[in-house]
Structures are given as structure tokens and as C-alpha cells.
Length: 155
Ligand code: MG
Image (cartoon, rainbow, N blue to C red):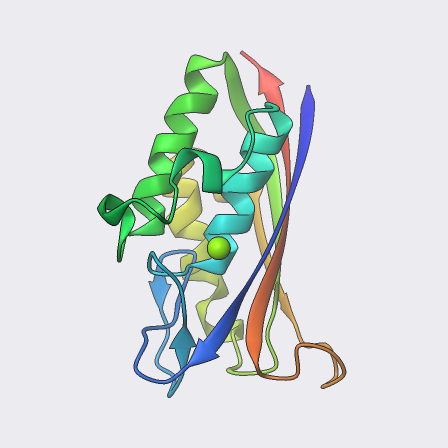
């Protein structure tokens, strides 16, 4: 078995979509980034690549490459899952914590888990997505962060 950890933060800004785990969330602000800036999926991809000691998403999908401008992070995740599969590993389970002062994410958590389980073709029980605030102390609404931990099992 291999364990991986990923962390990412993106800034909230006007005139951008807010996409988390492939779910578009209605909000006056969205996340700034080269791709769709799906911070939760970015942390998850880094956790998988970390478990396999294959670097990070910046190495796989460089933001200097115009190919990834506005990229759908769920599509990038499918590429990382394929890489994991080729390396001989399958997902045991994953756990993501999204840190956001705003908006409230509770109504979207189920769809996020279903989206990720669909990408891995695994049971939703193996996919945990949680959301928390930092009580206004740290990110304080300027951005959204995400931590991800994965357990990969040798096939
Ligand atoms: Mg990122």
C-alpha cells in the first residue's frame, strides 16, 4: 500500500467559475487559475502522484502549456488515474478537506463524492469529501484551500 498527501490553494476572484470536485457552485466569486482551478481535484491529483513518487501536477500539466488553459481538472484527474493504473495501483480510499469561508459547501458534497467515485469507478463509500471554515482566521475568504490524502493498493 502507498499513502499520498496533496495540498493546494487558489485565490477567489470575480468573473471566474467556482468548480470543486467537478461541481459548478453558484457564487459571486470563482477560483483564479490556469485551468478551471478546481483546487480540491488539484490536491487530490498531487496526493495520488505523491503516493507514487511521480512529482506533482505542475510537472505533469505545466501552466506554461497553453494546452491546459481552462482545462477541466476532472479530465486531468482521469489522466492521473490512468497513470496510477499503469503503475499497478488502485484506489483504496481518499479523504479530502476543503477549506472555505464562503460559500457554504454542504449542499454539494454528495455530488462531489459521486463525481470522484465515477472517475475512479469505485464505491462512493471510499470517497470522503469534507468542508470546513477556518473561523475567519486564516484564508478568511480570500481563497479556497484543499488537503487530500489517498491510500493506494497494489493490484
Ligand atoms: Mg492548483
